[in-house]
Image 1: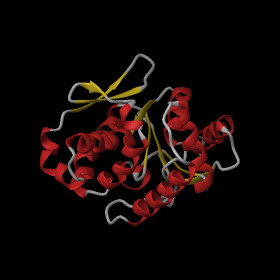
Image 2: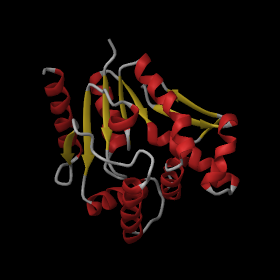
Image 3: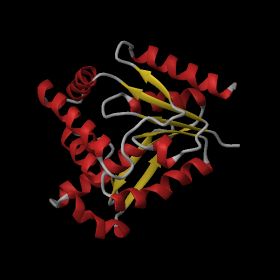
Image 4: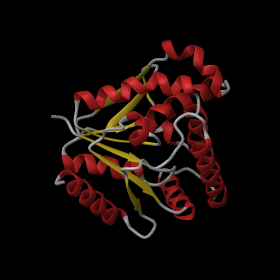
Length: 221
């Protein structure tokens, strides 16, 4: 029987990195739902259209999700591997606007749920435990202070050779938190049965260890 771990939390909390490593440790498939929304966002930016104008084009949108030999998720847009392009800071800002569109969320919901039916998964996003997988075996709400998330995001961008200002990243994170928490469709919130994990004072290894402890503790109950 397939198992599912739902990881939710605000932008920059480290969900993708930790969820990927958790999936590897558990032998599960990792599903990065944020990457899917980012791909739609990148499409609107390349077409130079506002987010809402993507709705009539969703049915014909050529978006594919693939996994390499190590189980790493790769995103393709119109046949092009955009796995790196969607990580640009500007795409992150647009992704929040795209994700607020109910038509986009409905379009991607079935795909996300199908992955959990066909595989044991670790799935991360904003509404996995509340909307996408409300009956997940384990739910974790991963967070950190806005300041810590901004510093981590800045370091990530610098490691990719991208320039950014800490103050702008911090403001963008606060703006995105507000957008995600206040949107009318699937707002960001902690599921009632999710375990809260604040990693503000933890490094990567400590955060992963804490997540593994939560997963094993829930599976043993």
